Image (cartoon, rainbow, N blue to C red; front, side):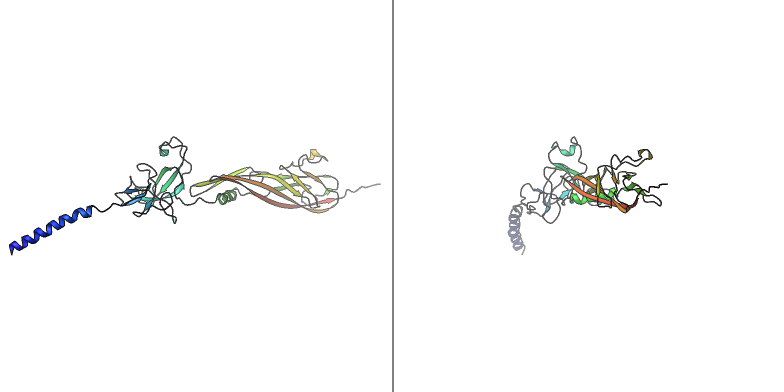
Length: 306
């Protein structure tokens, strides 16, 4: 019986030894360049930085992520490493760093001004971030990784306009709309913007940001068109000149009108704004107009004879 056992052991043991080289000879995971196999995470990863400033794709072994740089696939943003030197702490490429670091910052890796600096953001507790504070790493890339698409710059421009709180001018006019105030046919009428400021005349500049992108808009009044209520209109390129007693019967030097008939007239001042914006590699212009109205009374001069 002892001899039979020994024979069995001698037969089985060589078979086990022969099988081991076959297992070791299995082909390793093949990553299509520029993907590289990470032996720690067992994944194909694109490296877009050096050392801890890595950004790139995270795809299953053998999947190169298609044509999307960063390997995130067409259904999501690019993945990137926010952990220490490729230990699998993965974040997401969230867009351009804003503002971009100066050209002498080491993050450029000597490539400035080519390419751009992007943000790789993780979740709390990933990549060594403090509790509740998502980690953030910056990295250089020659072309944009598969980050989420930037916002529509015109949408951000309109958000910047909303911050301006633009309003029509406060109408200044002689004769004013008040009890006992009556103008005279043939006498000059003065029109102006009462207390002009950034919100009523401009220029005024505001910015709006989203997803690491910023658009800046500047609004200026180009002209004010006065509908005088008698079928005529007057275009003034500035805020006008407030009336003073010393002007007497002199017409306004900048913005005025003369009525040729008596009556009560509705006067409307419409401000035409031009809002020029720039950002996210684009520029544009958004026109706006704002209006307000008042009423004035014009009468005939009475000649009293004896």
